[in-house]
Length: 314
Image (cartoon, rainbow, N blue to C red; front, side, top):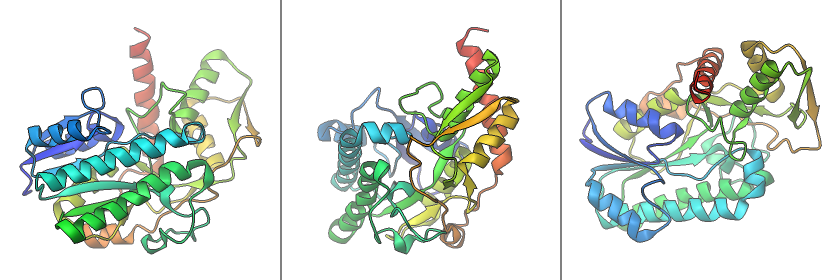
């Protein structure tokens, strides 16, 4: 590992914790910062962070993100916050001549009806699904930003397109920002504890998604940081597709809830299908996911139950 000092923005968050741990596991000196300490929407604060950390690599995980309800309710906020954070981080890396910058895109940036599995070359072939288009476009435009700075200033930045992530430390205790897996775990655990006869879930259950365990995501970022230096985007995922209904059934089984599951189709489904072609990540820097879907869900539910018990003072 050539990067002796790494700055991880968003390093105190869900993904940031896992990425910080992965870099530190091989003796890298890591500075992890979060929004409680710095506002990366402010250019001067961002420059102060990069200047003070004196890194030779920046891994930018800072993002304003959430589930379908959060995307639907706060599109302006999501577009502004994500654009400003990425603009400021990229420009600060230019100002201080940072040798390597890692940027994250999102599966939300792909067009609504992208042929499955999604190939990186199709990223610009249409408009994203409407409920998450503001977030998706802000993340997509970061690729343009990175490639433009590479051409004009020689900034060595890479861009990784992340699929839906899950695992410990996700937004479990925030209805406002919760993603689908934390939301489902919350609902089924609460229903079991309350003895509810049924649980009502959003949408039809028919859309498909691809999920990557957070430790696998951290490994992909680590390997790409170490081995990849090209301007083209690379998908990061498992290549496995599962319907929301199948996901709900798997979580219900792990939790041990045996009531009825109802679907409320008045709520949006979001993008019809999501599944990535992940062959480039394997070919270019040797990443292949290791944690199976069933094992990852089991670990996540176990962590959530322990954390809930801790928060309740038991």
